[in-house]
Length: 291
Image (cartoon, rainbow, N blue to C red; front, side, top):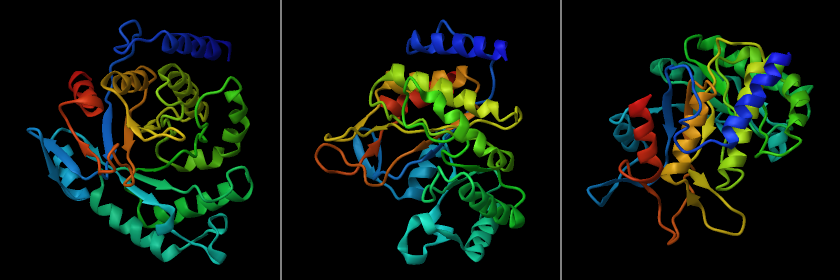
């Protein structure tokens, strides 16, 4: 236990003083896969915006080695008596259908997003999640299945008392045992504060490992989007995205799940387009080329 805290302190110190290329922090070389769920308007090619559907954009990104993942929102799996999300009831027929469909894409990780239930109800909610996971796995024993921001629970940025989530995470131990990989949410809740993001990453990666399943991959959710209250959504810079990827790699992540919102617009109200030759996506490409 003492060794664990010493190691955590070391990594935390390293992350605080970390530069964009993490040259002073060593890590064992290991596979790191980048998956993306990008629902923008298309991509930029030779300075021109090319409109693309979600499927077309996915094929375009795949040509650069960025794979897709099967993100299933809870509305596809649950019914809502009275229209309230906290009362969501698993629809077994739809879950079975989704499970069978995923078998056709065996190398694509499946991620279930179930945020409607009260997460602080540590009696009912874990049982409900296990019910959904169990039903999915009953018809699909092949796909790698994970949950968005559940094991461990979403910390929504970093705070000095972040360890208060330890008890909540422990209450979801049965759920941690049921999934095939862990996906903490490491969105940009601290805005463009890289130091705060690094600290949150250290805590969440350590929280995954506390569950005691060293063979289960850790594939965190990240996003290039920075949504600030009262202001427009901005995007991570090249340096900021490189920092995020390098930190995750140094902390032992097996990859990351990049998520974007279909509602994101630029300063002029237009849909976003990705550019593999600049900004955050260029950082993803450069990172993948060296890891």
